[in-house]
Amino acid sequence: MMRMSSFEAIENKMRGVGLSDAAIKAFRHSVGVLESKQSMQIPEAEISPAEGVEEWEALVAATPEADASLLAQAVMIKLNGGLGTSMGLQKAKSLLEIKPGVTFLDVIVRQVRSLRERAGYPVSLLLMNSFSTSADTMAHLARYAEEGFADPDKVEMIQNRVPKLQTDTLQPVEFAANPDLEWCPPGHGDLYPALLGSGWLEKLLAAGVKYAFISNSDNLGAQPDTRFLRWFAESGVPFVMEVTRRTEADKKGGHLATRKADGQPLLREIAQCPDADLADFQNIEKHRYFNTNNLWIRLDVLLDYLAANGGVLPLPVIRNVKTVDPRDAATPQVYQLETAMGAAIQCFPGARAVCVPRSRFFPVKTCSDLLLLRSDAVQIDDAGMMSLAPECRGVAPIVQLDSKLYKLVDSLDALGVPGLKHVTKLTVTGPYCFADGEPLSGEVTV
Picture 1 (cartoon, rainbow, N blue to C red):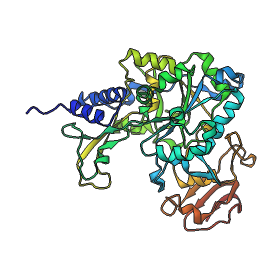
Picture 2 (picture 1 turned 45 degrees about the vertical axis):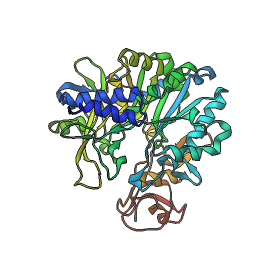
Picture 3 (picture 1 turned 90 degrees about the horizontal axis):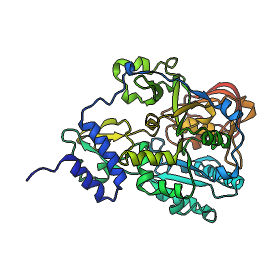
Picture 4 (picture 1 turned 30 degrees about the vertical axis):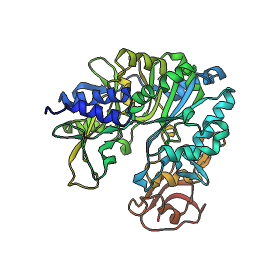
């Protein structure tokens, strides 16, 4: 009996769990790149440092606020698929408390509520949940049912999943001990096939929604800005990536560059950098900008592009080699294929990058980040807008907690939340207990 081709087997597996044609076509593209054995790397010789990056403050200062009619044409899309397992969570990361009784998700609702009040119109919110975060997220939003936030048909899109592939045959792996481990997330580049395959792209456009602001749910710095919305709408630019200046702490993160062949901006992740070029990749004076994962996209242009390209956005593919059970090195090796949402900047002629202040990039990846958010150095108002306390003078305190002692969220309970608005740097190198609100100042090591 003839063996089924790898993609026939992949397609059958994906259809078997109800994945859309758009998801299957997108993964077919990724597998095709893998099968072609073409390089998935972006050598230094093919790029030059990013050009033409404009400054956010100058654009915003020169642009009036968006009016109600323009706000009605906007959607805020939040990537909400992460569980936060690295911090010891078994629920949606956006359900972490950042202030007493207030989660990331509550702040997002505040932001959308504020926009709706200004627009006099139910401005759209769309959460891209995963199979793992959907139930917890929607249960939490039940408290806002009267405002329309608890109806999945109005606020939820489910992220796709893709098969892990055997490294020798590219067949989808089978793992009877735990079939869930046969699947992996496809990266946030899945936003585009998820929008198309779920019907949300056409649904939004039919409702007159044309401008999308997209960001991670754990980045409270990614606040909707109505002046920039007006600039984006009037500029005619199809795609804008918010970037910010790299520091030593960011040298392993993806950076913006310009493709020499045609002058198109592109995003290069460290997995796409040849080993010989790592020194250039980490040279923050040469490659000065990194991707905040805050994007602005014209949805009508996105639909036209997808229609012209068989429903596929040909994003660069990132190949990760893992074991099917990541906790058991003896299980078979597999490929996990991912794409990055920001990499779409290379697909749209006229796409641009704007350098934003660091305050628009405030993600929570560690307990150090979370402690800062919970402290008095960070303020969140009733409209969901985040700002640093005036005492910080525009510079966030640096928090460095012992990574072994304070890796999991629960470990912060015993530490307490000191006052940090007068602190330049807090370093905690062992077990300690602060009184909540205990005032600190200057550079503190305990």
